[in-house]
Image 1 (cartoon, rainbow, N blue to C red):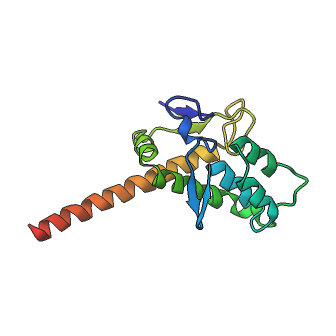
Image 2 (cartoon, rainbow, N blue to C red):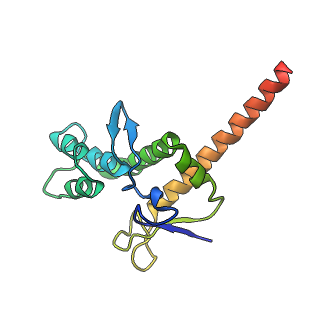
Length: 162
């Protein structure tokens, strides 16, 4: 069964949205949402990034970040996927309940059902790249692998002590 999400209010998977109110700390700075962080990185080191960080809502952060009158950093197209991956990973490392929910999805496909977004989402007709959904599945796989390694280490620790 494919798992779809779009807005933070979609139950039970709306928390997978970058607009969900699950803050992250990146490089010693607290961000209200993944969306705040992601949009600000388009303008890293400029006053625009600080303006995005202070935005009251993720929607405001996105509106500022999508303003094409503001100059994007020159390498944005090359780094945007990595920026998103790191932020999404941090979100699920920070919030245990979200991590548990993500891991509970097993091997199901995760799709951001964003009708207007053919890069991060699946688009209106399902032909989009679903890059955010793919990153979530990659994060899920990484977190599962880490959990398995930690359990193995705990078992070998107990054997050595026992």
